[in-house]
Image (tube, rainbow, N blue to C red; front, side):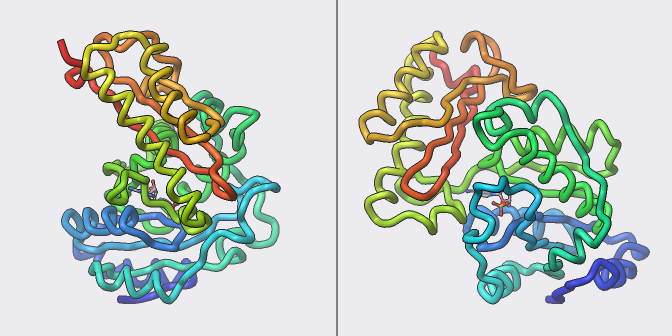
Length: 289
Ligand code: AMP
């Protein structure tokens, strides 16, 4: 496995496989690799000839009051895990390499970045502006045929698909299911922030989503009914959601009913020092009669 710190080094490493017609897969990450990331790397390994994993804690997607300084970093562990999954190249640039002096450009997607995580009282659309800018850069640097993302960050996946479509990036975006701990908690680098008690309370998020799914499967048709069931699980655990919303999974507009179309149920909540997000898609055929 090769580790490239510079864009030029990465391009050079990819030049030969590219001319030989090898397919290149990209897995963008912010490191502190866990099973969620590894599931993406495994999918890339299955589908592509050359697997590139990027590890870059992107400063522009963190707000001023967010956890950039404390975000978990473990490069040695990341390299070992990436290698064990058969990664060919890890691209681990420094901030200067990605945002050199004079950097003045951003990629901005509207609408789908202005709700849920992008609402003014949440992380705001600037968060996604940071995400789309760095992902656009990574897609241009690596020029993969396929790029792999996790459903854990459902809105991010919608935003990136939209960017790739609108700006004609010649890439296929693959979104893979959320990987969970045995008790349901979605694996996340931010789970490192939780002490054992908070870790236990954090299971309320996935429990709330599962309860909503069960209600839907039992025939509940009203969005309010589904949300109330989820909300009750959070309340019982003393977890106050920052948002709990049912939206259209493609354009993130509010869902009106559970009839006929899939609904994305998304939740964000602070548990101790961690801001956690989770989501599920309730499909028409999981709604019973
Ligand atoms: P991050 O390092 O948090 O920026 O995540 C990098 C990629 O891994 C993103 O596409 C995430 O959606 C994905 N990811 C993070 N957690 C999970 C998870 N629990 N299951 C599946 N994918 C995940």
